[in-house]
Structure formats: structure tokens, C-alpha cells
Image (tube, helix red, strand yellow):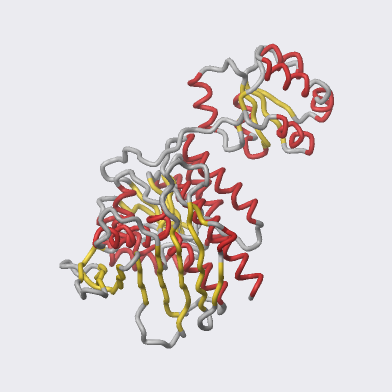
Length: 442
């Protein structure tokens, strides 16, 4: 036994009789699988095989720790020749979990996979932005085989819309479990209200699907940030353990990559970044906070496309409110102070907002990288499909690019998440930090 194992064993000894009396510990792979959603955590022994450890990481969504020997497990909990034990949720389990810090197993990060040649896709919520997603999936050689609707009436309308758009019937379902069971998709595209993202993405990952979530990655104003972060961690761990892609859909990550490609920066680092995104109000609640929660994730994704290893410094956040339903956020992105030869900071200014619902102004999308300023205008490609014209405002030169959402979905279809779970979580963290500042003022 190693010295750390001895120390942990000694710490658990006085707790073990209470654990047994409370009946919060159990073993047996099948039994634990049946009750996996009620487990607080699992312990696998130090001598478990690599294959077994990989399978357990894949099959169980709860935290998994590697600690103790088979002999120590038997001494503590009277389970003979056992390499896997599970703990039900309780105050005592939480106390034991504190003792296991530093021993948690994490599956390797998955950001690229080999997809089937024509992956099957289901869209959760296809009456809004989901119908555009469906179009791009099919144009990327995927097959849209079903969608989730909220009522029989909305399902009937969306079936008709998708049939016209895609040229073939697509069946709608009002039950996620039945949809996944009947269609056996490779990819689940989540275009539902943000408060439903965690539950549906988790169900899809547990079924073995790759998952793409609309922005924001996760959000529910009824939940504190700590809970949302735990949900992010759980989804990432599920995806990694099952070797499945998990990503967020924000086309502005691709927009900024195109701006960088068209700029004259060369090897010059970006030290100043500004971005503006203004859209008509439509069905959104009024207020700067509502506008930020709706649009902020997009412009943060744009910053992430430039910032690389740099992180938002919360102490630099400054807020301005230039008009009703608008907010400008200023902050610095810097690398860690202990990073050797860190890149220079980026001074960022992001403006988002909703224009009056009756406005005839088009979406306003402006991006500045140092002295390069670009505007993005709606356009159509040679096939009549939606595209963007990126215009350099200094030179008046313009370049047409495919719809960035189309590019992002095509990349996912071919096994690459441009905004994988780790970046989606960072995006949410920054978005909520700024939202808290807006809420404290407004």
C-alpha cells in the first residue's frame, strides 16, 4: 500500500461503521448501473484494469475516484474481492468525497472523432433556428431523421416546413426518449430553450450520441452559477468517457476566423478587439440584461477565436449602456502571470443590443481587430443559399463567405467541434460573470 492510500484508509476507518449503518454504500456493476442516477460518486480500486476503468468512466455519469486496495475495501465495508463501490447521496457521502480530493478520474478530452459517412441527425426544436440547422446538416451530407416538438400542432407545422425545405418527410416526436429510441441518431442538435439544454444533452450523451448545443451552452436563471458549472463538467465528462463530440453552436467564432484571414495583420498580435451585434427586438424581453443573455455568447465566442490561451480578467470589466436594450462591455484578456513569454493583453469592447421591433435596419455586425474593421452583411451564394459579405470598411473590399453556421455544422458533421465543451464552458463562465455585473446595476 502506498503512503497516500494508508492515510486515506486511516481517515475512512472511523466513518466506515456509520456508512454501513446508513446503507449508503453498495457494489455490483449491474446493481450500480440500475441506480446510477442516484449515486453521489464511485470508488474504483487502485489495481483495477485499464479496460474496466475505461468502461466505468463511459457508463457512469457521477464523479469517479481511484483509491484504496481490494483488501482495504473489504476491511472497511465487508465487500469481498470488490474493485468497484458506489455511494448514494447523503451528508456522509459528501464528507467522504472531500477526503477523495485529487483522486478523481477524468477521461481524455475529445474534440475530434471519426463520423459515419452520412451521419443521422435529430434536431430538438426545429420550428425556429433549428430549421436552418436542419438545412445545413443535409447540405453537409448528414441525414435529418427526426425532430422534437412541443405539441401535436407544432409538430404538424414543422413536419410540413421541413418536408418543403429538405425535400423529404421528417417525423416529429413529442417525447425525447421515444425519438432517440426510434431514430438511433449519431448526432443530436439541441435548439431548445437554454434551460432545457442540460437535461436533453445529458440524455443524448447517455444514449451514445454526439451533441451540438445552440448558444448559450447552458443557462437557467433559476440556478446559481456553481450548479451550471457542475452541469457543464458532467456533460464534458460524459462526452469524453464515451468518446463523443460535445460542442456549442455560435457562428461568430467562425466569423472572426474569417476576419483574421482577411486582415492585414500578418504576424502582428491582436491587442485591440471591438465587436458590435445589434438585432431587432422581436420576441425578446426588454432590458440590457436580456439583450446580453441573448447575444453575449456570440461575441464572447468571437473573442475566444482571437484570445487563444488568454482569459477574461473580471477586475477589468466596465459596463456602459449606450441606448435602451443595449450594453457595452469593456474588459482585458490576459494570459496567466506565470506563463513564459505570454502574448500581449487584448483590450476588448463588445456591444450587444436589440433594436426596436418595428425597425427596418438590418442586423448590425461590426468587428475591429487592431486597425482592421469589418462589417458583415447578409447575402446569397450562387445556389441561392444564405451567405455573408465581409467588407473591409477601410478599403471597401468585400469577400463573400458561406454562412458561418453552415461551416460550423459542416465541421461537426465531419467530426470536429469548433467550440468544444471546454470552450463552451469558458464562454458560459464569461457570459455569467458579465451578466452578474449588468444585473447589479440594472
